[in-house]
Structure formats: C-alpha cells, structure tokens
Length: 394
Image (cartoon, rainbow, N blue to C red; front, side, top):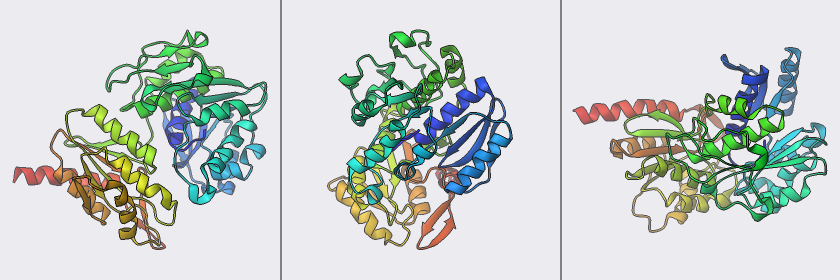
C-alpha cells in the first residue's frame, strides 16, 4: 500500500479481511508491526520501524508460520529501491497530495518514488488504483504487462478519470450510519450491494474499497470480503471518536488534503451543527504545506491553531505560516499549548457540535526541541470532555 493519505487504514482493512479468511497475517504500518488474527484482534511485534526492524518482524512472522503480509510502504523507502529488493504481488495506491516535499523537492519526484511500487510488480500480480485521483492515470500507464489493473473510487474525491472506463467499485453517495451502495463493473458483479462498512466517513469507504479489491485480486471471494468488511474496524487515531458530548474525533490528518477531507467528514456527520478543528504542523518538515493547510481549514467554523511536533522550530512561527491561509476567517484562535487548545475547543463546542483534533492521531509523544515528551490527544480529550460537562453542571 502506498499513497499520501489512507495507507494505514487501507492496510488495516486488508489485513482484517485476509485474517478472517486465511488465518494470521503480519501487518506493517506507521503504528508498528502486528499479527492480525480473526476473532483475536492484533498482537503487536516489538521491533523498530527501520529496515532492520522490518526484516526482524517479517522473520518472526515467517518463523511462526505466517505466509501473508500487508505492508504500508513510504515514498522514502520506495525511492531507495525497496520494491526492487522486496517485490510485491499486489500494489495499492490511495492518493497523491501535498506532502514530503522537503524530502522529494517536487511533486513529480514524489510521484516517481511512489511509482516504483507499481513498476516492479511481479507478473501475474495486480495494481489497485484510485480512479478519482489524477496521479493514477499516469500510474496506469507504467504498470507492467501481465499485471491486472483494478480501480475504485468515491465521488467525494471527484469524478472518475476517463482512462479507467468502468470503475470496478464506485460509491456515488455516502450517508453516515447507512449501508454503502456500490456501483460495480461486470467482473465485480458478485460483490454484494449494499454492503455494511463500519465507516464513520467517506474517507474510510474509499480505503475499504481499496482493501476489498486487494483481497479480491488475491483470490478471496466477494461474499467473504463483504462479510469481513462488515466486522472490520478502522485503526486507532484515524477519525476515531473519543468523546460523545460534544462529538470529538482524533485524526492523523496532517496534509492539506487530509485536513480538508476530515473537515468534510465532520460535515457529513453533523450537517446542521458547527465543526471546530484543532491542528498545527510539524517543525523541521515541509514548510510549503503550511499555508495550504490553513486554506483547507477555512471550511471549519472555528479554528484553533496550536503546536504539533514543533521540533527545533518556533511554534509561533509555524502557526504564523499556517495563519496566512486563514486570512479573513472570522473565528481563529491561536493557542500554542496543545492540551490547552484542545480543552478550549471542547469547552467552546455545543453539545451537537463536532470537534476534530488533527495531526497526531495515534501518537503518544510530542517532539519539542530535541526531547520526546509524553503526550496523547486521546488522553487530553478524555480529560477535557468530562471537565466540560462538570463545568456546565456548576
């Protein structure tokens, strides 16, 4: 799995489908290494996230008899030849948006790095491409002969590209809490529709479709895939509901596109209420995405700018970069203490509002200077929400 956003969610969905049908699966994501087993949840493997740790985790899984692996692959790993050393049978592309240009310099180099996964797919393999992402038109052209191409899409991202013709799995409209109605190509005619997906937003529907096609390409039946999706859970820290009143979601969104789509997901859930967003941007990383993140946040009713992982940069300077994209927005609060910003947003929210805490997701540390300090958005929300209710009673 590769792409800018959605890799971890897609990998998690795919591993749950495979585990339900074929038994234990090893999964590698930014969250770590896991053994997924049907009915038993996940077992975490304690290995580092560098290449040596990856090899050790795969070796441990192999020694335990596991023969299926679902891997999240970064553009940095791909640019260094990972797909040549470790060729894949099935490659999945989620999307390409603004990120990591501090490493890749240009969007073209970023895409070229991602493309390495598909250029090196094994004969008889499959490429799963997002038919609504413009980058996939180019990827489709470089897929080797003998590799089958499958496509998916969700209309919330845009129209399907003409190059894909009939999209294999497409969702035109998503309503939270309802089964997902699929438009299917002839070769996917056996796939049930509607299908139940535990997806709080259209973002996860998109990821679930990608995972479903990856499983289908690996030989799993459409009925087994649909049954597995009805039970599959999104990963921790990905549009995860942490509080009920107000509704507070913690999400890893840290790019302009991801932030825009997360805010749109908040609108899907509460179309008649306000959406409040808390976010910042990482220090010592791609500075060019900061102002676009501010522009993406304009869709929220109230914006709380705060710190993310400032590292060695001045948090106020990072916030000022983001704020350039929020000029003339009527409700912007700058509070650089992240815990205080989250508490302020929750205190400001009405009972039926949606609060989105974005940027760190599953992380349990905040990097300030050169120090890694304990910090969890989940824990802060879990403390702040009860305090808000207590204050209302008094």
